[in-house]
Image 1 (cartoon, chains in turn orange, red):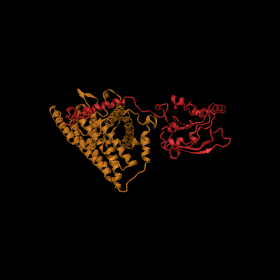
Image 2 (spheres, rainbow over the protein chains, first blue to last red):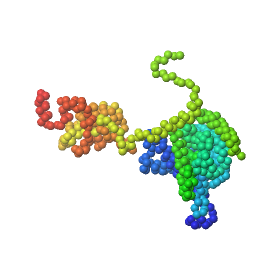
Image 3 (cartoon, rainbow over the protein chains, first blue to last red):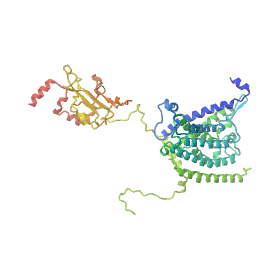
Image 4 (cartoon, chains in turn yellow, cyan):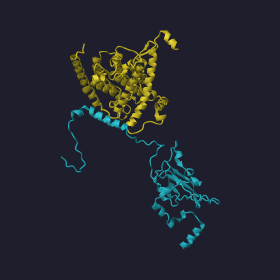
Length: 354
Length: 207
């Protein structure tokens, strides 16, 4: 089989990587639900699920089976096409963003280079922003198609929240790009090679922590995580935009949220914390080992940020809608613009601006 | 300004937030540190059924209809427990003891059908207090779950304790010291083991 692949001349590798990435995203999202319950429990002085399998690790499988076996209800008064389209778009955009993230350094086997990135679009960052914007459609369509006042209100709140925080996210990404000089995600990862070079840290977090802060807050708002989870909290709007959904479509919405969380954490660790780079990586001779450790480091950073997302969820109470909008428009956007101006000035005077 | 009527009114602070408070971030980080410390604290979950919560000695659980030392049922279907029950959970049907059943029942009247509806029962113990024959007690067994409502009506098969001496339910802890002394009163002598010689003797002494 491998000789067939190798000699056919057709580059199978990106397709295999797509399938692997798809499976890993779903697996990580499933176990993120388990981790959410366990982390929530441990932060609240209790044990989480520990009955389904040792330490409860088969819990996501039990939840998945439950989701499959529930009855699929499509309300008569809903718009059937859009009803099914909503979760589909949410899941699609959640999974699409994983295509441009470099998961590790290139693996060189027998002289053939395997890139651990599905595509290396040279406008990778713009692609990410674009796909995240389309993700808003999933929620809006879901709320509208339900033909339910509360779902519509939830969808309105969710979409307005997401588009307001996208502006701040966009401006902070522009700031980031100003000092990376490139939109390509692979190059951003390569620029953060190692940990220490030329007398300073290479990771972008140390070059401009404020951008990290703004981007992190916007990522929290984009994935509808507490404290920005007004659209989906049960006390506010019954179920928000997923009130009318059941079984697999609801499963898609919930899963898409966790996949989004996984990808956002991966993006944050890529942009600001060096992605697959780790200290002393130049001192290891075996390139394959460097690649393997790099993949492990990337996942470790992503998992850490998923933990931070959950940690914040169980610490802070939810924002009220007007407080949320206030924060997005009146605090984050001016802050990011000021940051952009200051970064520009600093770069000009240190001679880095071309 | 109104005079405060109690000393418990709290002064509300209407001060403007300091700059550090307005940032929210120091407060959030402080909160996150507290939450993280909970990660390392002891968990308060009781992993039932491996661990159980401690219960008192007089815990009121499932009922038991006791037998005496000879194995005869103590219950005489007098109905005082049914009258005492605030939830009207007990029902019974009396029957007359036939020849040859003297070993099974203490007196001529016994309960042919005795049912307690566990869904109505509030486990107050008033039936136990009302019984003049020391027949019904509440034990520390917990009533298990069922799928149908009808399965919660417990009949004599579930309530009367087994004949086998090793399987009898121990209710000595149900009675405090003062209750035990009270029951030594000659008025309750009929609840003890029925010895015909002693009954004749006590009748003679009562005259």
